[in-house]
Image 1 (cartoon, helix red, strand yellow):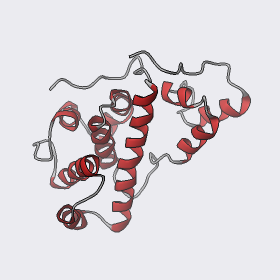
Image 2 (cartoon, one colour; image 1 turned 45 degrees about the horizontal axis):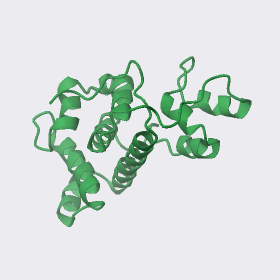
Image 3 (cartoon, one colour; image 1 turned 90 degrees about the vertical axis):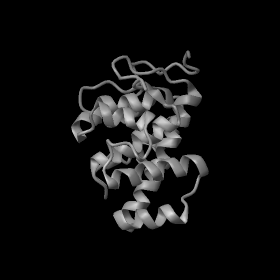
Amino acid sequence: MDPRLAPLEPPYGEPLAVTLASMMPPGMPPLRLFRTIAHNPRVLEKIRASNLLDRGSIERRHREVVILRATARCRCEYELGVHVAFFAAKVGLGAAEVAATVHGGPDHPAWSERERTLIQLVDELHDTSALSDGLWAVLRRHWSDEQLVELVVLAGFYHTISFVVNGLGVACEPDAPRFPRG
């Protein structure tokens, strides 16, 4: 699919250049997603402010499992590819786990017991926009209240990002992996 909005290209005006630079590691050009959202600088600022990639209450590996599963369920190849390229190996997610986020279920052998609950959380939220009482009881055995809030918001945030990417037709980053084959 061709992008519906072309990502902005440099040179950027001063406020936008500062915002885009703040969203990336030093020396790395801004992602297509950010340059596309930059058509509306106010929305870009809101997205930047909503970033949950800092050290929150959940382990980085678990955060990436939620992000990869949410983006896989939304068929958002762009965002899954960016997270695989930037974070998967750093948090100990190998090819089998990445493939399981796209093609496996909570019973896939790649997942620990706690990770199975994350897959179930994302799947129930995706399928029903809610969590069943049964799953909530299981989640409470593995995660604190603080972590549960973060996990639900994280899944919702990456649904939003997936909607933005898919709705605007953001093209995959050139070096980012694509969906693994099933």
